[in-house]
Image (tube, rainbow, N blue to C red):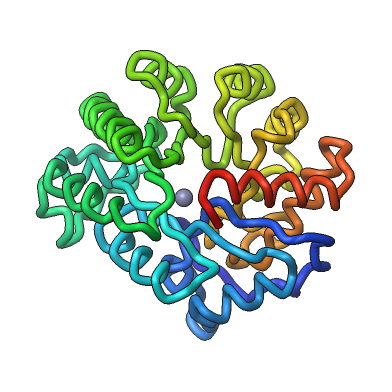
Length: 300
Ligand SMILES: [Zn+2]
């Protein structure tokens, strides 16, 4: 999670038309703020975002606790729909694997991890049947944190989530960190759900073209604004407009020039503007296309 985040950035200019934040974690905002910085809460965050053109969000609950919260919020707020899954790093903890990550961070199991991985996914499968849940995600592979044992657990968990998305006819959102080839391999072997979305796409242009060829959707987040992210911008430029999505992944990945500050859906216009520049798209036309794609995938 990294260091705590300071003051909220100023509001960016509003978008010319409404879009949807494809992937956000509003329940995590309070966990990343420096002491003294207020979390305005989900209703205020949604209102602030809507005023700038971000009219709906897909709230991702990817552990047992946040999945329950996300489904509840989806019933309380018409502009929020939910995604539920066991994140690959969560799957490792439910399976009782304790590997030290390359950054030296030791996993710290929480009370929810006393439940077995099978049991945890069974609860996700129940929640996913709620009519306000519109995606299974985020699932996938995170090889940054996992060693050999953890990777095996993640692969099996990913496969069960793929089967669940297919069974329920829901879109699936994929988390892929340092695991591009393996994610594509699992999708090839098991067959991808009809709607497969790479959240916070982090591959290069070649992988983006391959994903597009397979009919997958690619969602871009704050990194398209980062100085060092030429590879991600090159990827964004080759995706057909109809397979493109945008997201904040808030409270993480705050777009430049606000890195180090907390992120929230109201900052999505910064990323959308940069995406339009990188692709040479008319901003209004890009917003209309993004809005239409989100509607067709998630019914928002
Ligand atoms: Zn996420």
